[in-house]
Image (tube, rainbow, N blue to C red):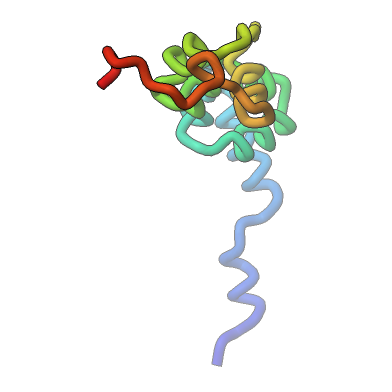
Length: 114
């Protein structure tokens, strides 16, 4: 038979969560950015609500560059219309929400592409 009071005592208490959050907040912002870049865009956006440090780290180009496809520079270079962005997060959001026509907007291949 399990003792319910002993089961509850093994669960982390709110103070422990607060201590853990406080201890991670002392990390340099670049470390937090590196950690967030290993998550997902959704998780990084959620982490921005934790604190000012997390917000700044979550919005950094270090994080959002990891979420972009490896060939994003070639993709935007081939875009029919110029793609303007100030941050990698802005570029990610634009590419996620917009259609980007490539290669003059046609499916024709040049003979030298073969």
